Length: 236
Image 1 (tube, rainbow, N blue to C red):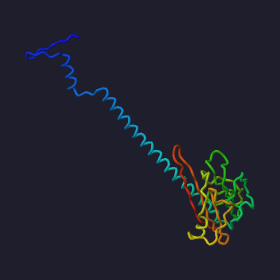
Image 2 (image 1 turned 180 degrees about the vertical axis):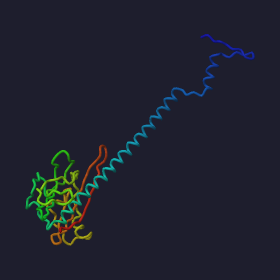
Image 3 (image 1 turned 180 degrees about the horizontal axis):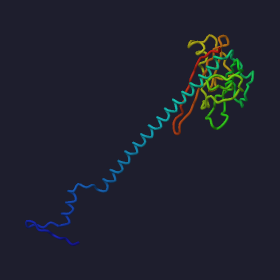
């Protein structure tokens, strides 16, 4: 290798060594340092993206939870409205049949009203438009004013979908019927519905009905969420 020497004050310094010293003094990064910095930057970006995705999933689950709670509340409001118009609650819903085909769904609640007998059943969805098990109402249609249309043909309509496939056995019937106190005599469980996602029991003397709805659903990649509502309503 050919060295070019520069003389300063009677000494000679190799020009190549002088260039290396200048490069060190310039404050630049080595290739290893640059790769390390890039790796840390990518790691930080990955953490940020995961946090944002997690927040998005949590927001989606919370939104779904609120929506399903609202749907469940509307379903119970409809049942309570039918109960208020009912003259009696059938203690054996399967005994009197239904004005609509139930397609194998067990009848849980049957109400005798001036328009006819309204039946609520629970089971498989009638089509792929609905998710999971469904609550179906067989009864008269409602008009634009929100009132029952007299003289209309009874129709089956899905009231609520997403009911739990494996419902939690219901133990709250007697407590609801007795105002939260221990029951002296248990109410009549309607058609063995305590193991169904739509459960009902009846106090034959007061015609009070205790109801339970249980939904279960999960978003993609999320854990299952369960919503349970209980209500006490009376006929007439």
